[in-house]
Length: 363
Image (cartoon, one colour):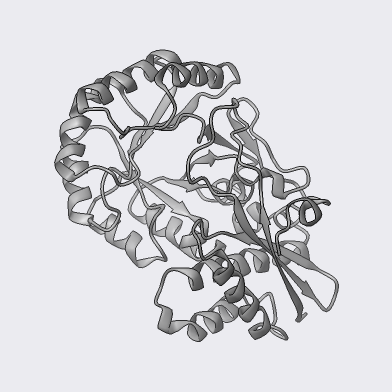
């Protein structure tokens, strides 16, 4: 089997929050690049990636150049293909545009592998479970007025979500007001809901410890990215000071930074971003490393693909259901009462929506 053709498309999805119709998150991802790798025996693998900034067309160019480089390669030799791409882009370093492009290709190669062997990706990778827990994300953001935040939080519980994430660090609020706001959210979802809080790297180490201690009685599921992602020592100080579990990792590129967080004992829960990690291949390596450190892993974005990965590994904790990518696919998996079912079709079990490129394509 050989790679015959690689197709790249750029699409822009609507700005929406479909979980409860809450106001869209400022800066939410809208532009995605789709990858279709066609083989000489008729198997097509798909992948996606995004940059989330103003140079998305640069990412598209990188994918197009990489597509030319891998023509004629065996798509089942995933490590060989991605090693070739990393070597070709070595001056870029381990992160950034090159890494995001390689990830999309790696995802598509694993889709091909699953289809070639006739099994879903989750089963190909280990097949531990057919269903995984999912938490609602993206509906309770820091820009949402407090009264609307409470209503949206209660609506998520009514929809059957038992795990929900919100944000702290709201412009214009002092720490006491921040604490009061998160207490209102806890009141809206009840004591039995697993409530997580995302800080998005916006606190200093001192602020994280000071404010974190004031909300420990809320028994949060985790405090996410409380300070800068590469301040491993600072994260470790926060983790030691608080009883609340610390979750981090979504901002990290590749394997090595995750090793740093684990060896510094800076995280209790490892969050892995499929695109920054390096695709399926590297995601699984990070999950294995986390297992060796006796730490669970959670996913970041792309729930339609991450459902396979979290389901495959013994330390898979939960899928983040952030509904930013569902319009890309025809009949994507959706949460039902706080769970996601692994697609049963071979590979990713996904295909791009039939009208995707006509309706949302931008070149």
